[in-house]
Structures are given as C-alpha cells and as structure tokens.
Image 1 (cartoon, rainbow, N blue to C red):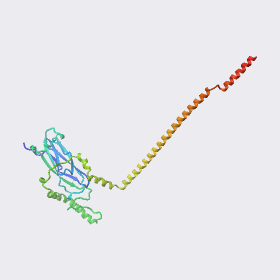
Image 2 (image 1 turned 45 degrees about the vertical axis):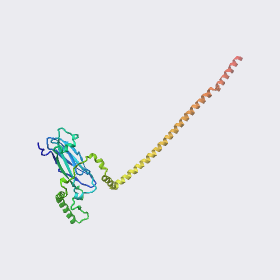
Image 3 (image 1 turned 120 degrees about the horizontal axis):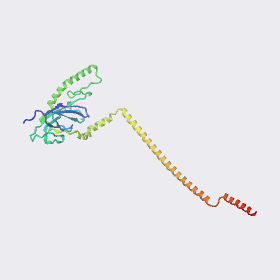
Image 4 (image 1 turned 180 degrees about the vertical axis):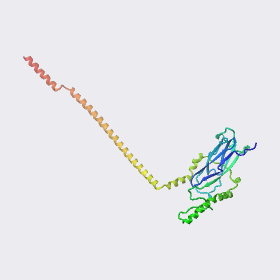
Length: 304
C-alpha cells in the first residue's frame, strides 16, 4: 500500500513576522488534517534559539484543524535587506487511532523503521510595520520621507516609495532565491523550543535593553507624577510617625492616670480605717453628758 497523497494542508505557506527592532513578533499557522487517520505533527527549525513554538508537537483528529504559534525573539538590529534564511520543517505521520498528545514518541518521526513521514518546509518573511518610516530597503538603503524637503522632492519620494512597494516583492524573492542555499545544504532542522522556555529568554540582554530604553524614554509629565507620588509617600510616612508618637504619649498618660487612681483608692481605704478606729476608742461626749444628767436627776429624786 503506497503512502497517502497528502496528510496536512498548511495555511499560510510561509511565516510572516512584523519586524521591529527590540520587539517580539508572533504569527500563527493552521494545520488541516485532510485524511481519515489520526495524524501527529512536529515542528523543527534551523534557528531554534531565535524562535519559540507553541505547541511544537501534537495530534490532529481526522478531518480536523490545529493551530500553532511561532514567536520570534526580539532582535537588536534588522537583518540585511530585511531577509532571513531561517527555515521551518513541519513533519507529520499517521499514528494509531485514539492517540493523544502525550502518546507521541520520537520514534514516530524516524524514517529508519520504514514509516511514512510527510515533510513541509516553510520560509520566514519579514514585514515592516505600517507606521514605520522604513518601508522597504533598496540596495541596503532605507527609503524615508525627509521633513524639510521641497514639495517637488516629496512627490518624487512618494513616487519612489510606491514604485519600491510594487517592485520590492519580486526583487526580494529573486534575491532570496539567489542567496539562500539549497535545501540539502541547510543545517539539520532542530526542534524549536516551546514557549515554556520563554522565561529564560526574557532575561536576555535584548529584553534588558528594552526595559532600559523604556525607562529612559519616560515623558516629563510621568517623571513629575513619580516625584509627586514620592512626596506624598514621604508626607504620609511623617504623619504616621507623628501619630505613633502621639499614641505612645497617650498611653503613658493613661498609665499615669491609672496609677494616680490606684493611689487615691488606697488613701480612701486608709482614711476609712482611721475613722472607724476613732469611733471605737472611748465613749462619745454627748453620751457622757447624758449619763451625768441622768445621775443628777436620780440623786434629786433620792434626796426627796
């Protein structure tokens, strides 16, 4: 039984990245399973350190679709003529019915055991952003629209730009065909790392340069806002310190008041004890006078 005519249909047929210096760029590719079999795929590239793929392996159900995303890491400078010789290889093969992503083995993509491996190559195309003044390089020079040119020169520049936009795709493809090595001469394709490894790449010097450039390019009003926030924070800290001191003073005063209250209570108890002791010692003066009067009255009665 011969190999199937075609397992996967790939859309689009090339990887288009909007290129900006020191910025990441991503593009998506759709894989369409045209067979009635379970098909496993694997993505490889000639420059695994420059790209990340998610997912780089998987299984596509019969007559179904799958999508993977390729992210190009931030580059410090634009390549010559805005062209890269990087290539991607999409390998696909039939796997047993009911296979899942975790069931994929490296042996599935080995031709040594006689398996049929379908291979599709994708090239990388760099596209300038729409707002960039660099529209298309011609002979290594960038086309720009100078701000101080006369009206006639501006019209000439516009004409050159439109002409470059029309002629650039054909010349770029011709240059790529002339300069790119044959597919047999390209180094062995290597598996592109998945995006799970991206945190380590984020710590690269290019991302650090982005952070430094962003800090240096802060607008004046943003700097003022930061200074105002710092002043407000300092004021809040000073107010908090004052409040802490006031709370400490109030606590000390409360302790003093409690101590004075205890001393007054003790003095009141002592005074009460002294007054009770005075009452118990001897007879009251009025009682003595009353008894004297009673004695006089009794004596008067006896003498009569």
